[in-house]
Length: 404
Image (tube, rainbow, N blue to C red; front, side):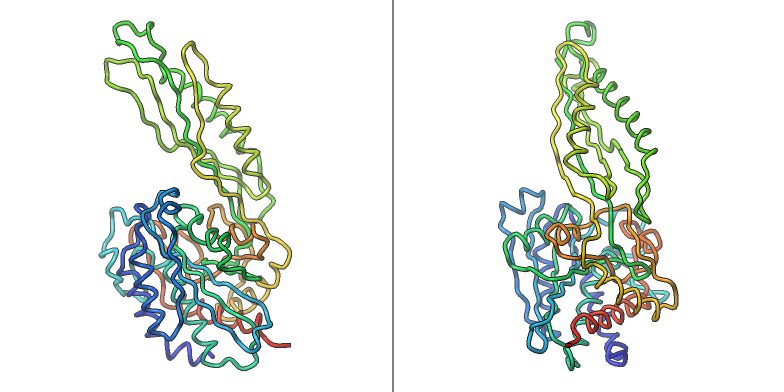
């Protein structure tokens, strides 16, 4: 099938460019337009596309405006073999500043396509779709089903995307491969806990601060406790290759009324990264207890609200059936050792694993997020990496669906 993919590659490049040119920033998360554009592009390739509109109340609950997830199912042979899902997300972070090209222009230069989402992960809309197209072109000896799960809320947690599709019973694959980079097979990643901490006091005139309860003064005690905890976490090391230590960051602070008023309310948002050995619920309970112990002062109280809890991705039984062919085919094609490791970020692939579905991350892209400028200015994907991922996914699917 190498010849088919190579000959069809110009069409794959134009397919990816068309996806990049349709904005799908999350936030704000108004992604239904991109879903429809993607569906029409897949239909032009000859695929039957299921459109699954997520109810407005569900979308709103997770901080988005609109989302329509797409599912494509292709059955081969008798359909008795495994169901393999390929999951990529079409929502992207906003472009921000510092671009040398139009972030929605899909500019091709120097053997790469530049644009927001070119690497993460509209590239895998293309690599997965055209790998499946190659299977359809020659289905001999295949038995089973390949599904494309094209979702729209990875940047906000995956609850509206893969989790919703799984919870609604729309999909239930035997294996899942989610968007990733071509030079490693990722079998684990960190989780994350976001907490909103509100320290409450009582306002007073700055000429008589003793008549109030200073929420900012109390918040400094909370900050001191959190930064002490950050130091403690640096002494904990994950056993998973590619993952370092738990992390703790206070990313946002707001509050106060005016310069001459004792602040009665301080709000902090914190990010706690979980290594695979940790349990998110237990970490949350301990962190909330630490914060409450740190709050001191008459008239002071504190509330802690969970914003998001994403458990880590951990290898489960059966994942080796994905790792082995991906590692073998990628190593042969890219002529380098393909590592099997974890990464310190978190993705929506964890929802498949949590449902008992063996899951890894593999897709188009370079050796690292930094190399692709993913989530940064001038994000790009090398055409050679896009083509390589298409070949590797196609060959892996053939191994997984080969009739006995």
